[in-house]
Image 1 (cartoon, rainbow, N blue to C red):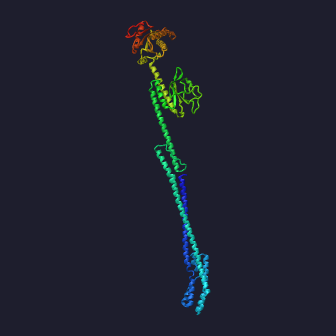
Image 2: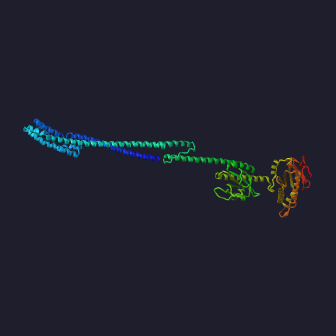
Length: 602
């Protein structure tokens, strides 16, 4: 019950008790007034009836005095008093007005009539005394019958007064008792009102206000200090204190929600900072190996509940090949065809488990009936598919905790970094390759020679090749025919190199092969094979056979012939010797010291 309801009930009860008390007080006052009226009436009746028998006594006394003394003065006094007497009703009017009742007045009237009847005997005695018969007069007024009648009258008057006294005494007692009763009721109601007020005051301020307010004050202090572990007490009653406790609970819940939002925002900000830092590092990568190191370092920090792999698309083999992994994934194959992944088929994120039922990818847990909780994110760019970002849930982690937005952002950033690397490699390839033959150009050769490492156990051989009489093709068939010849020779060299060898277009009709880990005799054999292979080429242009193509080659080896930075110089000197020696041949440079203007023989 609300405090307002309790207060209203207490106020209503207080008003009711006050009204009862006021009524009792009014009734007590009325009773007191009746008591005062009864006292006044008694006094008035006592005063009025105290002279009720005086006329009888006076007339009787004067008549007796005259009968005894014969004094005319007594007779005159008697006659004056007798003449002054009025009618009975007139003589008792003041008694009636003082409050005497009809029955009481009737009894008084009877007594007075009896008193008036004695006047006959009194007048007879006075007549006898005036006649000189004193004895007869005395005998009449002092006779036993006269005394009895006189006593009867006095007894009747006394009885009348007793009745008046008894009635007024009863009325006075009744009024006094009623006044005391109502006064007691009024005092009791006032006492009950005071007790009710004190009880309500104690209940409200002690039990329903003071204790809860003290508890709520402590909770408010703690909540103000953002200590949301402070839980407001629960008050089931519906009142202002309950409303305050409910408001504090709502404030606490809002504070907890705000705290969770701040924590989530801080976590999101930290994660976005981590993603930003990862993106910056990926933008600084020069190759895929650098990118893989960055991914292995940052991805487990961004999504620690997910193990995963980075797959890159091998276009020549049309396969997704694992580039790197983190947190030991176990469920996806290290290599698979693009059609084995639904994410690559659809071009969007794919989850086979969780809230949405979907088809599992063939590369996830192959041969198992139960597909793990996994996420596949395709890595794509303007050039098409670049690879795949694969995640699988670690034991004990919840998939709901994985933020989709961050995963998509991660995939976009990695895809963008891969695309940038491929674009950079393409640009580098364009800068380092000859556009006509697609072989590496001279700039690329210079970059390779700067990092070339040569040891006696791992030598390096350089073969400088020149197309014999190349000007003939341009003069007879046109420059386009010359380009066809250059492309044919470049293709032959590109297919002739093995792993670790490099083929370059050195300039014009000159080409260069750099053979790593190959000694002189092996390099000579390779050069002879290339010369023979090129001599066997048949190139047609505009429907015509361009004739045989022959090449001259000069070979140098480091460290057998020279130092690594002198390979080009010695190979060029050997090529010059081959041309001077009649062309279509291979000439090996001598061991140094040697000069490039010396004609060398085989």
